[in-house]
Amino acid sequence: METLGNSFYEFAAILGIAAAMAMFGRMLRQPLIVSFIAVGLVVGPYGIGLLESIEKIELLSEMGIAILLFVVGLKLDVTLIRSTGRVALFSGLGQVIFTSVFGYLIGIGLGFEPVVSLYVAVALTFSSTIIIVKLLSDKKEIQSLHGQISIGFLIVQDIVVIIAMIVLSAMGTPSEYTVMEEVLVVVAKGIGFMLFVFLLMRYVVGRITSFMARTPELLVLFAVTWAIALAALSDYLGFSKEVGAFLGGVSLSATPYREVISGRLNSLRDFLLLFFFIHLGSQVNVPLLGQQLIPSLVLSLFVLVGNPIIVMIILGTMGYRKRTGFLAGLNVAQISEFSLILAALGLSLGQIDEETLGLITLVGLFTIGISTYLILYSHQLYERISPVLSVFERKNPFKEVDIGPDSAKSFDVIIFGLGMYGNNIARSLEDKGYSVFGVDFDPRAVARWKKKGRIAQYGDADDPELPEILPMDAQCVISSLEDKQINIALIKFLKEANYQGSIAVTSYTGRTAKELEKAGADLILLPFVDAAENIADKLKTLKNSS
Image 1 (cartoon, helix red, strand yellow):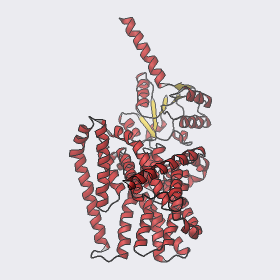
Image 2 (cartoon, one colour):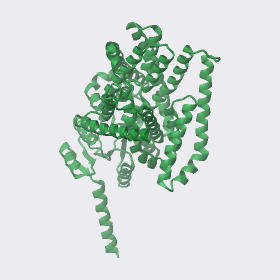
Image 3 (spheres, helix red, strand yellow):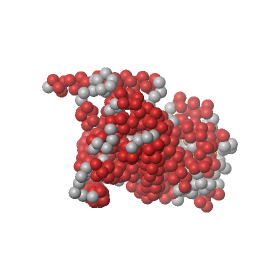
Image 4 (cartoon, one colour):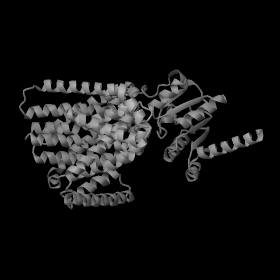
C-alpha cells in the first residue's frame, strides 16, 4: 500500500511538472513534444531523479503508442493502398538502402569498427512512427497524399527493422536455425497474422461493433481492448506492437463507427503519449553525450538532410510534385525509438559498447527535436525554398496533375474542400446550371468526387504553386474549408497569380470573418448563420401557406 501511495505521489508530481513545462513551452511557442521530452530529462536519473516507476511509465507509453497507431489504422482507406502502395514500397526501400549504405561509410570515415558502423548505419535507417503520426495528426494531414505515402513507407520500415534485428541477433548468438530460416518463419507468421485479422474483420468484428455501438461506453472499451490485444499478439509473434495496433484499426476502418471511435479515443491517445515522450527523455544518458558530440552532429546532419533528399528523388522520379516529395521527405528526417532498441540489443549481445549507445541516443535526441520543428513548419519552409527544389520534379508530374483532356475546359466555379459542405455547395450550383471543378488534399475525396462524374484535382489550398494547374478563368473560387490560415493563404496565392474572379471563403465565427475580409475575400460564407436564415425563410413560407 505504501508503494502504491508513493507511485501515486510520484505520478502527481510528474504530471504537475509536465503541465507547467507544457505551458511554459507554449508561451515560448515550442512544440509539446519537445516540452514533454524535456520533462523526461528533468525527472529522469540525470535530472532530479523523481522518476522511479519506470515500468509503469513504460507500460502507459506502450498503450499510448498502440492507441495512436490504432486510430491511424481507423482512418486508413484500404482502397488507397492501390494508389500509394507502390510509391510507399519504393520510397521506403530506397531510403533504407541509401541511409544504411552511406551511414556505414560515414561510420567508417569517423573511425568506427565495421560492426559498430553497421549498427550505427542500421539505426539511422528507421524513422519514428510515433513522432511522425502524432505530428501529422496534430496538423490534420494524415489523410493528405504526403501523409498517406509517409504512413506507407513507415510500414515498410517496420518490416525491414524486424528483419534487421533477426539478422543482427543471429550474428551474435548461436542458433539451430539459419538466418534465412528465421526470416522465412517471420514471413509465415506475418501472413498468418494478417489472414487471421482479415477473417475476423470479414466475419466477426462487424457484428461485435454493431452490438457494442448500442452503448457508446462499451464501443470505446471494445476498441481499446481490440487495439491492445492485437498489439500484444503482434509482439508475441515477434513483430512490433505498432503493427498489431495498426492492423486492429484497419480492421474497424470499414465499419460505420470508425469516426465515433476515433473521436472518443483522441484525448486518451494524447494523454497516454505524454508518458512515451517522458520515458524517451528519461532514457538519455547525459554523461555519455559530451563524448560523442562531434560524431553525433555529423550523423544527425546526414539524417536531417540526406533522408529527405533521397525521398524527394524517388517521388520526383515516380511523377509526384516537388511539394509532395518535400513534405514526405521531411517526415523521415529523424531516427526511431526502434533505433534505441536496436542499439540496446547490440549492447546486450556485446557487439557495441555504451559509447555507441550514447552516440545513437544523442543522434535520436537531435534529429527528433529538430525534425519536430521541420514538420510543424513544413509549409512555411517549403514556401521559402521551393524555387531550388525544381530539380526534384519532372516537367510533367503526372501522378498529381492528372485531369487529362478536361484540363482545357472552362469552369464557372472552383471549390476547395470536397467534404459534405463542399458537396452540398456543388450540388446546389449544378442544379442552377453552373459547371464545377473540385480540389482537395485527400485523394479519397477526389476519387469520390470523380465517381459522381465531376472533374477534380488533388491539391492543397495553401500550396503556392497550385494556381498553375487550375482553370484560372473560373468566375468564382469557393473554399468550404474552415481553417482560417489556409483560407488566408489561398486568398494570397490567388491574388499573386492575378486571379480576376471572385473569392468566397468559409468562416464559423464573426472574428474570423473580419480577418478574411481584411485578407481580400469578396464573400464570406457563414454556414450556421446561413442555415438559420434558411430555416427562418422556410418557417415563414410554411406559415403563409397555412
